Amino acid sequence: MFEELHKIIPDLVCVSLRDRDMDNPDVIGEGLEYKAITLPAVSPIVLLEWRRKNIESYLLCPKAIAEASGQPVENVKQYMQQNFALMIDDDGYVEASPPEPIITLDGKHIFTKETVGLEHIYNCNKYDVAQKMTAGEVCEDIKTFITRVRDQFGVQ
Image (tube, rainbow, N blue to C red; front, side):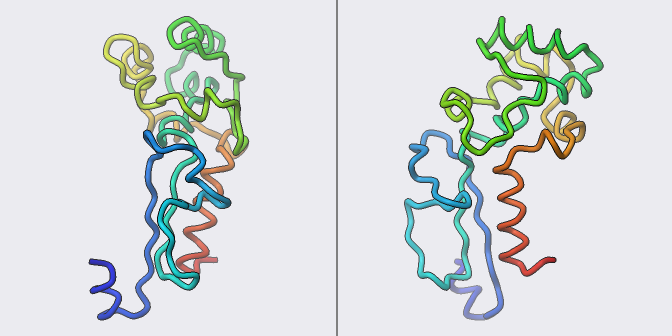
């Protein structure tokens, strides 16, 4: 479909971003590049994939969850430890290469699991949490994604 549109609109460019889901983390290269499909070097398409299992996995920031829910950060940290076996610092893991359990955990499940998910317990969702995150709490992969999109679309 893209190729047909590209014939009509030669300046058309595209960024595809996928959750990693069950893919092996090794399919993600430098700059979140999805390595399972090879495109020409000058392709108008950029294929990207999150290093972590899904976007929600980047939002496991106890301080932002506490801000969004109005609860003390220590309560949030204790709850995550007791119910999901997660010991996460106040600011979460912002580095591109956090410990392997952070790469493989299902953040969507932690937010939405019926009766015990963060949304149910703290009455806040991933969007509420994202709005409360400070620049210092935003993961490097998110910043990389934004940079890649800006570069692809020529935005300064």
